Amino acid sequence: KPVEASVLGPGTTPAEKTGQGKEGLSEWTVQRPKKTGSEPSPKGSGRQVLAAARTGTVEPQDRGGQEVLKQSYQQAYSWQQEGKTDLALSRYREILSQDPYNPYVLTNLGLIYQQAGNLKEAISLYEKAMESDPTFVAAAQNLGVAWMKAGNSEEAARWLERTLALQPDNANALVNLGLLYKRRGNREMARQALKKAWMLNNRLPEASYNLARLEEEAGNIPEAYRYYQQFLQTRNDPNDKLFREVQRHVQNWKVPEPVQK
Image (tube, one colour):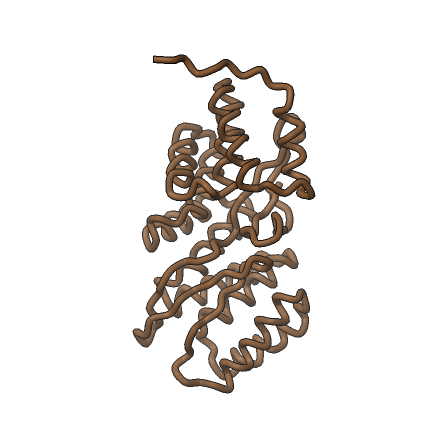
């Protein structure tokens, strides 16, 4: 079953642990990308969405000259980064009383509720963000993750596919979609999505790790070993629990040498 979002390590993408695999290894779902690209606001101004490494929140560049609200938002954002979620929640609510359709605030507020286990409220807030700005990638992707956590694979797939329609090169959404396909028993579609994510960003540890899991379960040991090694190279954090688990898992593998052509 999905559990609370957690951080993989310093400077990495937030992820959520979604279940235990064989050999005690875990499956990971990317929650938010570090960068989702430029997205137009309802008023048409360009905005850059940035995800913080610790919380998966989004930070706006501009809110149309609303300097007071912008400063208030920055304070709430900082509190959320620091884990002071009660203060952040209160400040976000104050901002919404003046700017009720702000997709950044709605999305960040939704993440607070999601991490507290209130998926119903989180989903409602993400949906309001999408109503405010139908091109808002962060809210679409968070909706996909929230529905995955809620166990609704149909809605999760719909929102992850919507994310990819808005941003086809979103490797994080592809990892999530690949894991969703795997849960639904479609291993080939899972492999295609994960492989595409890996080709877009082979430094994304979640893509390498989940491809390794998929190949190992299919009995493709050389390929599994290659992806596990890629995961270890990109994670490269001996203090990380999953890193140590993978190291122990593959240390005694006897992998055939590639056939020389």
